Structures are given as structure tokens and as C-alpha cells.
Amino acid sequence: MAVNDPSEYARALEAYLCKKNDGHLVRIVGPAFEQVCGWAEKGIPLTVACRGVDRYFERYYAKGPRRRPVRIEFCEADVLDVFDEWRRATGVAMWDNASALPSGEGDAAGAPASRRDSLPAHLERVVARLTALRGGEDRSLDEMLEAIVRELDTARAGAKGLRGAARDALVARLRALDGELLDAARARADAATLKALEKEADGELAAFRERMPRDAYEQSRRASVDRLLRERARLPVIAFD
Image: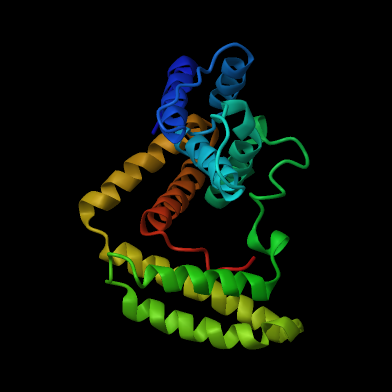
């Protein structure tokens, strides 16, 4: 979703925060308003900011029963982390020097799997996510998911001791499996869904389009569509970079 006016961006995010707070309205005013307008001016897509809010709430709920409504200021670190992930995943980071994050930001929850998890831990998490998907409403990928889970289960048993060429080979295989799974999800998506994802990707990239060469923009657009497709299908990232 593209929101060009910072005030509209803040109001949209306020409405989203209200929904996450179970209807309790926490106004985005004063310093919080300036903070959120800064996100809009930096080019953080509204959908990306919302995912950052989601990430904060996931951690908040994990701590136990909530005691008070969440304020948008509490979510900034997660919003910036998710934005940094998005910039790197879409390739925008190569062309977006103007909105680069300060050194040190984005290196915690938003970092690639290899920075925060060991290879065995990554495999364990991916197997758990894929196993959960097999019990969902969409069963079209079940056969492929089952085959991948079996392969990753086998790989996980010996992953801890892998070194050198053997480890590189497993990492390459994980990248290939990730691409195959995403291709399968794309093949099963109808034309209307893909068109909607392309429109959403254009909205997310709108603030950066004029800064990027055409071929770079098209590459980022494809990466953005892939990311949105992955999120829609709830597919984990199998690759370990």
C-alpha cells in the first residue's frame, strides 16, 4: 500500500495500531507523530511498518498477558529492523543511500538467519514451519512439503558437524529448495492474485522508483513480489545465507 502524505500514513498506522490493541485507540500525536512521519519520509512502506508492529506484538504476547495498550513509539526498533530486511531482500539497499539505517540497526531480529541462528537451529525451525503448513487449509503443496521435510530432517541430523565443502553444498541445496518451493507457490497462484501482488509491490517501491535504474527497479519488483507471495503462502525462508 502506497501512502504519499505523511499525515495519512500516520493516520493509517494509528488505525492499524488500534486494531492490534483490540480497539483501544492510542493517538499518534506530538513526538510520536513526528517519528512516524519520519518513517514515511524515509520511504518505509506502510505494509512494512505494519509488519514491524506485528513483530513487536508477537514478542509482547510471548511475555504473557498484556497490561496496557502498546504505543507506536515502542515499535520503532522492530519497524526499522523489518525495513532493513525489506531493503536487503528487494535490493533497494543498493540504491537507497538516502534512507540507509544508522550503523548497528537491523542486526538483531531483522538479521539474516545465519547471523542469529546456527545451521541446525535454522533447519529445525524451517522443518517446524513446513510441518505446520501441511496441516493448513491449502493442501496443494503437501506432497512437495513432505518431501522437503524428509530431506531437511535427514540433513539436520548431521548439520552440526559440517565444515568446508560439505557445508557449502548443504547451503547451496537449501537455496535451491527455497527457489523450488517459491516457484511452486507461484505456479499455483491465479492471475488475479499475482496481479494484486504486483500492484502491492509497486506501492511498496514507489518512494524509490525514481532513484533506481529501470533494470534495477524491475529486479527489485520481482523480489518484492516473491516476498509478498512467500508471506501470503506463509512459506518460511529455507535458504541460509
